[in-house]
Structures are given as C-alpha cells and as structure tokens.
Image (cartoon, rainbow, N blue to C red):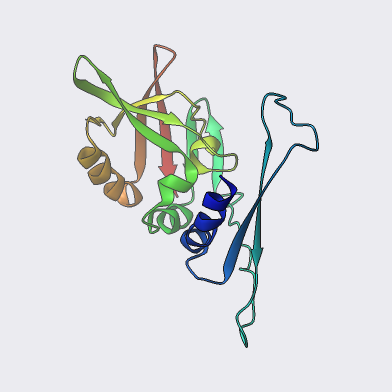
Length: 183
C-alpha cells in the first residue's frame, strides 16, 4: 500500500500544482492516537521545492472590494429606497456582479418557474441594503414577470437606465414591493 501511495505521489502533486516542482509525501503511522481508533492515521504533507534558479513567490492576497459603497443607498420610508445611479451603473458594469452579492436560483412548482429565490445575501451588498432577505422570491421587476434566466438577464440590463425600479417579492407567502428611486 505504501509503495502504491509513493508511486502516485508525484502525479498527484503535479495535478494539484501544475508543475513537477511539488512533491507529495505520505506517511502512515499508528501514533498519535487517531480520533477514529479503528484504523491508522493518514497524514498528507506537501513539500514544494524550487527548481534551480526559480524564485517561489506566493500569490498576493486578493483585495476584497466592498460589495456596494457605503452611502450609495438611503432608506426613504417603508420599502422605498434611494440608490445612487453611478454606484449602481458601476456595479452592473461588472459581468458577475450578482455572483458577488447573492445567489439566485429558479423556483419551480409543477414544472413552471415561479420566480427566483434569493440566497446568500452578503452583508453590505446592494440586496442587503435595500431590505432583501434570504429566501425572498423575486417574481417581477417593474411589472415584468421573471420566469427564466433570459428574462432576468434582459431586465437586469434595463435596470441602470430606469428612474424607478419596482421589485415584486414574495416573502414567507406574503407579497411585497420594494421601490428603488435612482438619483
């Protein structure tokens, strides 16, 4: 078994690192006492060595940009909000903006899409700042039903040019309309 693991070590390391510079070592031992006393402990260690003349530089950590700028949303009253048009346009100019803000999944009942469920709404994101909650069902934007990804994408393109945006939501079985006024 140990011979087999050692034979697989280099190909596995290459698959993970994309280069032959890595070496995967596998050690099997009975100590320290495993949390599961029925079997041996499997310990995986990866040791990377630089090739002659190669400098190993760790990747720089990605700068975490704020999901949506502070002050770009003002709560007016009830479910009405004012949103800075430039901040919204900057957000919508990024092709994957919604992936960084929340998760959107179709909600299907009896083979018919009812709308899109909203999940994973990030703190500080536009959806969070306008009062959307995890589990909300988005059924319409400015009165137009949202029943497919194509409809969602089409409506998403029109949003930054509108003066008002009405989001028709179903929250815990109750209809709700959130209104955004772009300034």
